[in-house]
Image (tube, rainbow, N blue to C red; front, side, top):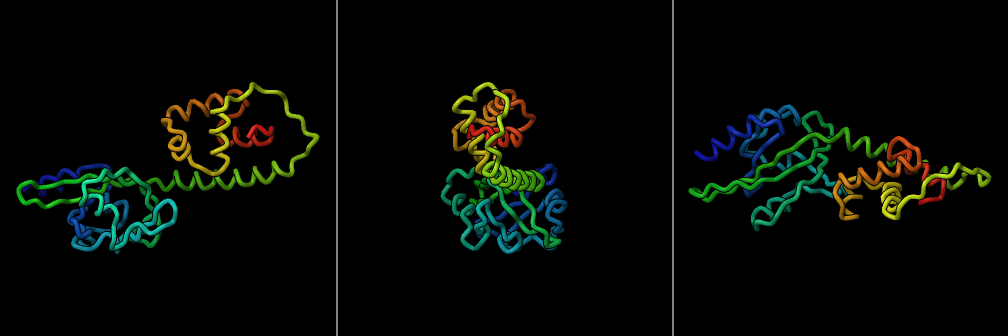
Length: 217
């Protein structure tokens, strides 16, 4: 009864939502999951999710396999942070999703289900990849810049602002920079905003490029 109520609740969520049991077998599949991944429930239910998604993590390593770490964490009741996953959809295309995990247990039957909530972040990932390529090009250009070039003076950057721009220049995404520095994404945005004001730039990409050209990072 409780499981049916859970499945009915998930069917109305905007996020793609599905549940798997402790063996990784898909037990429910909502309408948003069908729209995002392309599979109707008739092709999905009672099948292994690892076989379906063939998911890879942010470092390119295989995440979805028979030895699923997510299910292991669920079994041992360890905390599971949200994570990015590149998965295969029905068309054969691979997309990026951010996944949050909830653990549901029916106290009556003792059956435990792992609820996956997924949202499409493919566009954000592609933007980050493009930004990293542009920064790589900018670093190469800065190496061969004209030594006679003398840019106008600007207000000095703080050590934290230089550190933020330096990490971005190394190809790290904003979330990675915030995590490495132990700050919130809001604080990170404030540092980038102040750097933009000082360098008279309009976005983080321009700020990094100008900082490199000026030899500030």
